[in-house]
Length: 200
Length: 200
Length: 200
Image 1: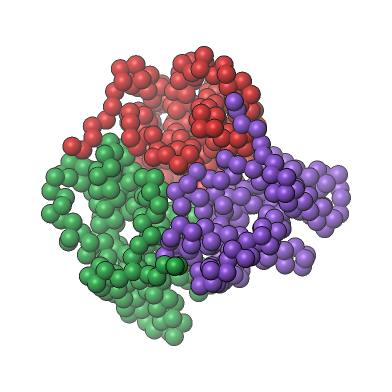
Image 2: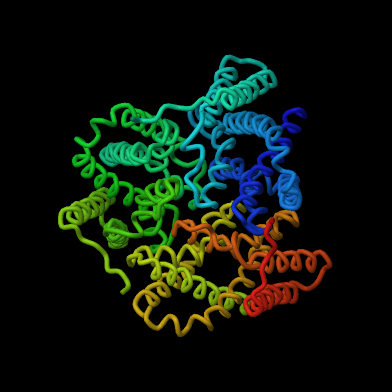
């Protein structure tokens, strides 16, 4: 499915840019910026493939998933003065990447005969583990565990895909619908500044 | 062996409760509490299965190991006001979980033809890596590396199992004896506040 | 190739010593020191084997890679008063280990039909991921992402090996030449205090 592949690459670039930018802001050197860009972009999918036992992982089988994040991180490193200007559009691409990663992850898990809960979890992991690794490497409490409903959007999207598949909906329709729901929820969450409850 | 399976599930619940409680105390939102509960409960066994190449790991093959931690974490999140009352009994269940996880891990490694030292290490990892991941995600130095003889109990239990197997002791007896030794040592360590030497 | 195996063991000891020493300085107990020593010595190669799907990893197939770090860490723990005296020679052994780990990792990746960029990355990872894990477990921003051209030396060495193999150079010559280039660059970097540019 070519549209999904295109969205996947777009998301990879957006995730790499946000990871590299985190490295620049924290005063890391070139290597640190490259590592953070790559880890953010491909960490989630790599962890998913490790758990599925589909090794070597996707990024070692198709090296475009290595070249794209490296190129993006280099660009962010060199042109970081202009970064603030693209920060808002980047949030949109980031949402697109999130939705795409989640449905690719959930879909792949289902095709490996993982159960419904495990498939949703692997989808959420595909979308979010890269950012968690980025935060661990930067020595911060992962953002996703403190703020925003980032993860809820992923859980809803993954669950929707499992349900649609179970109902026998056509493959492409299910993927697009589920991805769109994540993207929409994510954008609404940014716009209205939603957040999950804390224990009080 | 049904008793071991029951103790394993009991330990999973106890570990999930302690992980979720750590998330509540650190002011995490619902998602963070769920992640910490799950990671603490299944992180050790998952890492063991990754290293053994037995993929997908146990928790993706039997989804009860996903539902139990999620349910437990939800409960802790909602009823966290009552948590302090169950903190002491929880320590006992936690010790039971520790012993069970260690012998399951060591036993599984032996059945995968791992050498004696590797088998003990994988057993210790099964019992302790979940807590280490919990601390890394909370941005703290893993507790186990700073305090208490938590790990020593695991090492002794794993070594005992390797020895008993090597001596040809019956399977069930070896497992129960080794698990009991971990549980006992852990409870004694709590009671007498033992700790390992530091380099001075 | 016996020389490479000897250098590999030498590097394992040097990495274990530096990891254990980090634990001693941070006031960890015996178990923490053992874990940091082992993780630093075998973490990189283990992560490489996980990603290549070559499981169980090298250290569980040949237990000398477990006994050596444990013995080294124990020695550092007991004799840590004398450690400052060996800190400078240790840096040399550390450089030897770095070069050896990188070429072993890159070479193994190539023999698993990984592409050129992936092979270099896995080589760099074999040399550096142990130290990154050590820093994560100590709750610090990984040193490699903040300072020095440690990683650049690895990248250059890995790339050199890929090129030499591609040009059809004999296996042993390629390995020794690439490893030597890493070692030399690393020692020069220490001596002249080189560092990578930061984004300003």
